Image 1 (cartoon, rainbow, N blue to C red):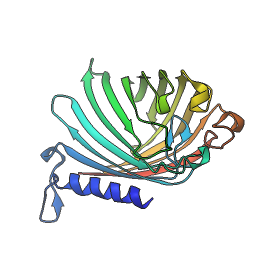
Image 2: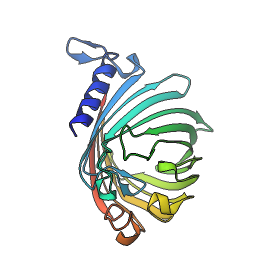
Image 3: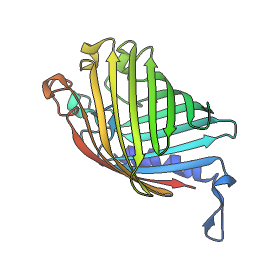
Length: 249
């Protein structure tokens, strides 16, 4: 955890040198294409599975958004794979590039490539992998529909090709509160090496938009039983996840 906090601190320190302040007030958001987001969450979940032993995580991201739709970013989180027998892994660092585009006034899309990096892990393993994503979003009145497809030619821990598709819906119930739900399916070539069968993941909850402060609470789960989850763990079981994020600027 100390290593993770040090990494987060370095990332924030490096990124905030690009954010200018005057008279104690931040400049307008349009003044800089650089943004920093800090997050605390009760459990870091990736496609329904806990990445931190069902415990709290601290996360940070730095992002550069150009005026032509290209975004470059880096994101870090502490992780804990000790339930699966790996006591070495402590951090995940993701580096990504994306391009956003509009199809019409109601429909937009994006193409994204992410490199998932794990600085330390069990000897003889290599968790790092690259994944591509195509996403679409369509708004009908207040209802927003989202679709995404992900593909990796060599997934986590060298488990071969993998694909995931997901769909989601969100709807504002109050001025600053939106309800949302998502469901997806993950396919993995080498299920035995990965530790689970192909599986369904889903979540339902709500988010609160307070400007720079974003709050989220939801129930997250998969269709995997304990015995099907990495040799008998609770990392795939359902649970409530609460998160708070603050963005600068």
